[in-house]
Image 1 (cartoon, rainbow, N blue to C red):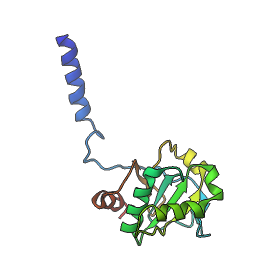
Image 2 (cartoon, rainbow, N blue to C red):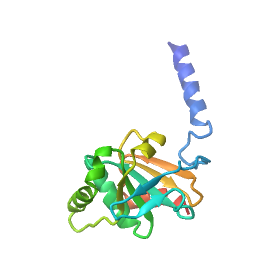
Image 3 (cartoon, rainbow, N blue to C red):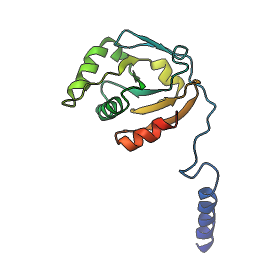
Length: 166
């Protein structure tokens, strides 16, 4: 029993001090965003090509994701001059983008979301999106900078996420 405890303790120490295991290390990814094109409920087409030169957030969500609504409001209201796109992972949302956008707006009194709502199941699959909300931060060069799983509602956390792109 003592030997197991010593081995487990040693493994914990090794993992704790291994590169990439501390929260202060930044992500150095060379992964590029896959080629995509989406048309939002604002009738604007956004693509990996026409967004080059702009940092942006892809927020993978779905109309049925109630937990996503608080993140949508928080990011859209806080990063007002940034490119922020809502992308559904559910193909059935394609016929109801305007209704979904309206429902999100109505979910928080006094808060209007200006971000574009769209659907792109293929892009979600290429990025291996398994949970909503999932946010992907893409740099000006089309490189994926960071991925955030779960709600993101605190302004300081939103800033920390976004500022990696600057």
